[in-house]
Length: 319
Ligand SMILES: Cc1cc2nc3c(=O)[nH]c(=O)nc-3n(C[C@H](O)[C@H](O)[C@H](O)COP(=O)(O)OP(=O)(O)OC[C@H]3O[C@@H](n4cnc5c(N)ncnc54)[C@H](O)[C@@H]3O)c2cc1C
Image (tube, rainbow, N blue to C red; front, side):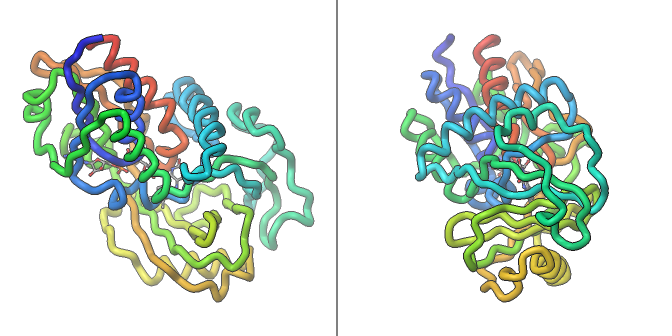
């Protein structure tokens, strides 16, 4: 291990988690970010730890598994924003018998009975999983990072050349921003929108398993419920759309009528960093090392601890 400071770019869930892992291992770490943590895509996420159908499949399984262990442990600290919550994952088509391997981590997973499925849904599972209240959780990560001696600066990084001039070890956690910073044309936005409402008494989550750009999800976090969702490929707009909010509220109310009149607290938009494959790897760049950690699509929270440990290992191995 060297004493060189590591520069992490980005303060969404990937940058902060990687920063925490490195700082708690005793490394000096600086995070530079273009946006405050509460203004990132990560702050918008629902968020649920759940199966991640992404590539590379073997690495994704490891990252999901590692993250599940961390989130389960974090749920014992109620200030973390992580809580184990029961609910349903359901589909309007027959899900069949095959399930992703990571669902073996869910101790109480079982098929829904027909009576447990909302109208229009034909198949589903009941499962207790970690739900993550992202605004609180990002605060938790920032506090952990600073407690471990980390330095967090609101300071955009215009080029990789500027980054490697500052540090010989750079971890790139820029989400959809990697398209511009790295010049990676494979990164694209998958726009999502949420409606946050006052909780009318809901204590279980619901998520529709679907490939459609419009689906139904709600996730309770204490006195708030986060309602979704939409997924629009190649859409860069960060402005909430009334049409999307109306559709989200209508679909959620069809599944859970108590949400029909719930008071709206906020409408939020985030850009999921879509990519054919998650990128966690080292690039040698002008005599320095850049550890890339981006392209997590709609599963960046689910993958966060696994990817952070791997990115930190790469930084240590080569540092
Ligand atoms: C509506 C919605 C619901 C979601 N639900 C879930 C869910 O339930 N479960 C789940 O696992 N995932 C979910 N996701 C996906 C998840 O939010 C993302 O995968 C994750 O937030 C990506 O994290 P990140 O840290 O890579 O990127 P971001 O959160 O986008 O952070 C990127 C950081 O990089 C910084 N940055 C970018 N460019 C530069 C630069 N040049 N210089 C300095 N800083 C820069 C930004 O300022 C920011 O700090 C959801 C996403 C959305 C939009």
